[in-house]
Image 1 (cartoon, helix red, strand yellow):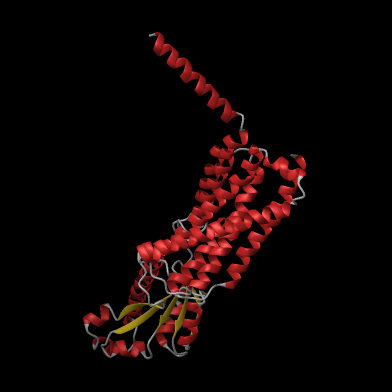
Image 2: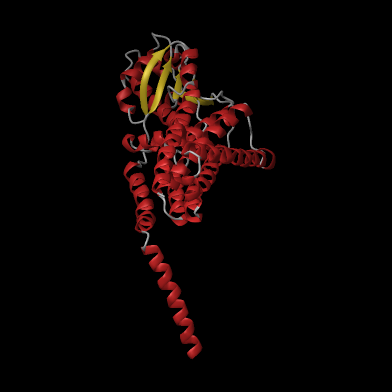
Length: 390
């Protein structure tokens, strides 16, 4: 009994020690509680199970009766279709699809209504350019629903025809379903869900590893007393930070190369783009992620606090970079948060390069580098202030 009592005393002493240690760090407690809660709150406020209507171009001749009828009744399908324009130039529609200016293209054959009245079915052609299999499925569903609506509207139109003979010549099979449809992907690539997720996983892994390593850097320097040596040395804050950046960039590049090799050779991941462009994206992601880590390191007082803030940064990226769900399912005010998240740019660029075989999007690359440069300058200022205080 005495032995058991001694065990309880030792247990309670450790319990008190750990509780006091946690309570002495109010910022850590707030981060542990408020951080995940605020992320979930923002996500809950922004999430909607309905995305924006598909931006659609109709390709048809100016006098196409069916196209004009669809446009006149477009308000009936405004929840699914955001009508952009009607054009007779299919190449223009393809160009806008490729540039992500529209989501869906509908090609209507010439003399569609006359063909139906000749007792022949007409095939409508839909085109999309989505990498995300879920979005491709959604647009396929939209195409099916729109075709059914066109069929119903056509049946009503034929029923109002003054020339009843032209209607009675139509067989029941054609009358009930005058239009069928075929669904095409402009990408020409069959993308599996796991392949679609892989570039995002690579970006998040690199970001989290580099952010965590950099977040622990200055905190450990302070704890080990090295910061005091830096203060009395001729080293400047910019030199210290630059040296650390170079070190972590080299380390991160090796990790990125290992992850890419394992993904490509080990998992058989399809690679359709230029590896050099992939390297550019990796370097930009590493540069920005290290900046996030050093910012966290400057505002943290302990290792535990730094690690927790790095985890919060990861959670934020998972929910608001488009990795977890497509950003089109977020309401615009919350959706704009993604514009400040580096992982969103890295994920989109890697997906386009690796899966679509596209060239690098330099606008996104410059934005990513701009965020990284801003974090670098902020880290220099904070490190300079920290060295003066220590």
